[in-house]
Length: 163
Length: 148
Image (cartoon, rainbow over all chains, first blue to last red; front, side, top):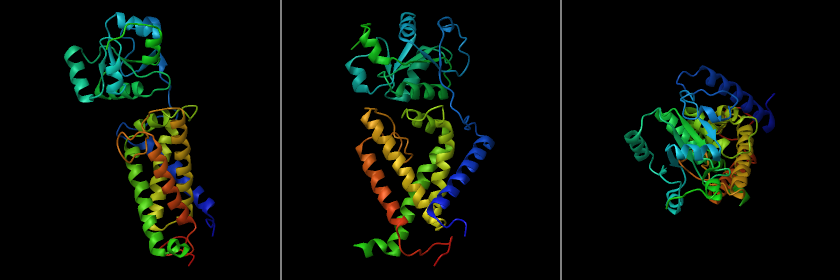
C-alpha cells in the first residue's frame, strides 16, 4: 500500500489539487481565470494622469503629490473606509463607498464610465481602496487610481479636509 | 471521555461536518479566484505575487479533502491536511490581528466576514475536530484505504 501514512495521503491531496486547480484555471472559459503570478498595480507616471493613456481596465496607484494634483483638477474621490471614519473627516468632495449601489448611481449621475476616479482608505496597509477599485472596475469604470497613502498621509500633510 | 471521542458514529458525524464545511468554503473561491486572491493579498504575507497560485490551488485542496472526509477516502490524509490548513489560517488571521489589520477574512463561509478573535476560536475548534478524526481508533465507514 503506497498511501499508508497520513503524510503520504496528504501529499496526494496536494498533488491532485495543484494539478486540477491549474488545469481548471487554464481551461475555464468564464473569464475568471487568473495568471498564476499576481501582477502588481503599477505606479501612475506624472504625465499619464488625465490623458486617458491609462487605457481600459488598468488600475494604477498614485502618490500623495499626484493625489493632490487630481484633487485640484476636481477629480472624483471615493472614500472606502467605514462610514464612521468618513463622517469624522474625509478629503473634501469625496463620497463614501458604504453603499456600493448608491455609490455607482451617484457616479453615473456626475460622470461617464471612462472618467477618472480616485479611491483611498485609511492608508498604511489598508486594503479597502484596492478592493473598491477592483469592484468599480468590474462595474465598467476604466480609469481608476488608488491613492495608497490614503487618509493618513493626506491628514499628516495638513491638506484640506471636510467634516 | 476517551471512549466518547472514539465512538465511530461521532467520528463519522465530525467527518461529515468538517468535510461539508470545507466543501462549502471552497465553492465561492473556485468560482471567483480573483477576489479570493485579493483577500489573500490583503494579509500581506505571501510574497512574489504567489497569492494567485494559492487562490487557484487552495480551494481545490479544500474541496478534495472535504470530499475525502465525507466519502471516507484517504481520511488520515484529509484530516492531516485540514489540520495543517487550519494552522495556516490561524497564523494568518492572528498575524493580521496583531498588525491591526481590519481586513476581510477570505474564509469563504460568509460574505464580508472580518478577521477577529472569533475566527481564531472557530478555527481552533475545527483544528481539534480534525485532530479527533486523525486519532480515531476504529476506521469505520471508510471506503479507501480499507484497513479494517
